[in-house]
Length: 145
Length: 145
Image 1 (cartoon, rainbow over the protein chains, first blue to last red):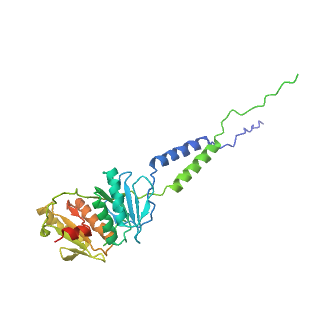
Image 2: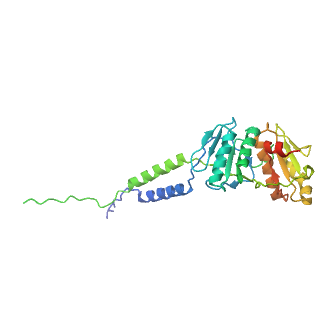
């Protein structure tokens, strides 16, 4: 009777390619990564039309309780005292970069009076395009108001 | 004479920890990058003119937004979903008919976005509103008659 000779197999999990996969993922994240200049938490209004905001746009954020923050798109946003300061910020920005779009990131429950004053400041500063930041509309909930 | 015994050094590059390092970096990027909202409604502001064309009040459609979000279109209360049907015959007669959105200062920003979005979406339903304007309170006081 012939006895089988047991072959000894190495119990190794090949981990060399793990690093390749991980690095690919990192590269993906780095490429898609956009620095968020304004981290204000707001409940954005929903809309059906949603266009991509140009890169490096300036941001003006308005919260429900009236705090206004501005950012030229290059650095993190700073708080300003009121719409009057938005005007000086926007005028200075337009002198430097006349074609820069301004993104208005306002809470949907913001009193319109405040949004009106901010928009008026942007108009007076001769901003050409304003983007009203919004989130995707839930299916089937269109036509509220 | 004593001969040094060569100790055997492994010729492999240790790559097992590479994956650990790479995954740590991935986790770092995932944690620090929040999903930034980068879409919204664009709102182009007409260039400032020295002699803006006068618009007869009767030529335009006025959409008023009351503090509670109710809509009054040309003095008639209306639902959001009815606006496009109201505009359709008027825009067929005059495709450049101006549509003015006038939110009450005590209403909310979200209502204005709802109406603006509805008008913009009209293009998908064959009612292209080309001339939407949202005058600010200052402009109303200066130009309204």
